[in-house]
Length: 395
Image 1 (tube, rainbow, N blue to C red):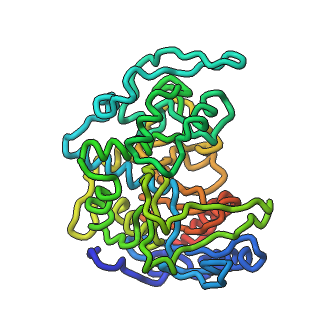
Image 2: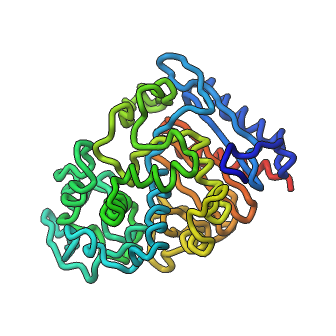
């Protein structure tokens, strides 16, 4: 594999069925024609070659502009794997340890408190231990997201405006640090703002802004030419847009305004990318941390990141399906069965709030990327896409 374009082949060259992939394309087209989805871009690669790469429907339903294979998408939480890789690159340089307490770098998290809800009051108790870097990477920090519940802890996040866009990463950490944790560190998997905090950790250790670090160390060397925290004006015509209203609920749909330069470079959900940008990142992961002549991570580091780090720590079945655990930045499959979709033990994935989705299956030497901008329909397409890609494996 060279550092140029990813090699392209016919599906049958890598053991995939063209007819089965055409059925996947038909399924997407049918949903677009029925008004459930504005458009999509899908990519499937196996054995280091792109076997299927198609654009469907409209890039902008308001203007009618057709979807392009180089359309730019808000990838939201698919930012998290990039940031997690960045942290582990610093780890490989010996600049941090995974069991380091994060207050070593971020003093706002010294002496954390856990919130205990008692009726209409919130009692604060000292945390049993510090939050570690590993806790942030595997979402066992005790932090949460304000939209994941209605407790007084979640309300405190809302009142503190932890999600505001007019803040720096440094300012967000200063806000988050004094807030009550939802759980004792290390005791519960809770999807959270942990990766936002990792973004600030990268800034403190590297001395660069998060966007500059990712551009210099990951996106630039990988050739992810459109990936970043905003879209420059000359590329505005390639931004994929959602329906103004959700076609099933009639609720207003509002996504990030990525035409403006980002003040808050959210490590948990602020980036944009094209499908091919993210495919290059997946290709690096599948090839043991290597892309072209560049080594981003060591093979054993990636094995470590994509192993289950939860064990008996309970998780949330809404976000972690049966037969899955969580590694350092990725959900990881631990059983062939149990989940309501096919896959291989050792495969890993994550997704974004507006409908973007990827997974890497080392056993099948396969990765796939789906890009849509349809928040209300995302769960349906995550399952549909994975089901039909696996159905296309012929040998």
